[in-house]
Length: 181
Image: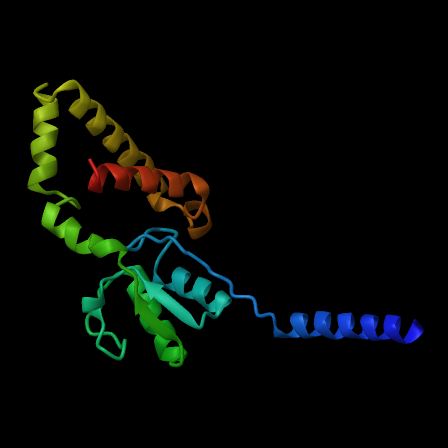
């Protein structure tokens, strides 16, 4: 009986120890940024944040057209996150980089002319200003502009301040109106 109990305890201990030593934890960090320098966020602040994490893999918010077949950079942009990543790749060349483009979002944005000053936004703004939108269109436009304004409030905040549930919710809802409605 003692031999069985001792065998059971030893077996259980070995299984427990083996599971603990083989267990590897993967951590995922998502860092929301602004594309262009502000008073509190620039390529250096993003680089320092990445440096603290020391990732093995970085997904860049970009389409695969920006990468060669070997995932080296084919095309880069003079934007905060790109400049920080290029610097990190230079200092840590073994780090893997991959594109992360949400269902060709960047291409759809260009096609729909959603970002920046564009004819579609100017058209909707004019129609709203002259009260030519039907009620549901007007409500959607008002909600969209409210969300955009709320997000603009965060544009001069720190990385810590913009990486919160409030901004995640604002971005998610705004993208719903940008891409689905």
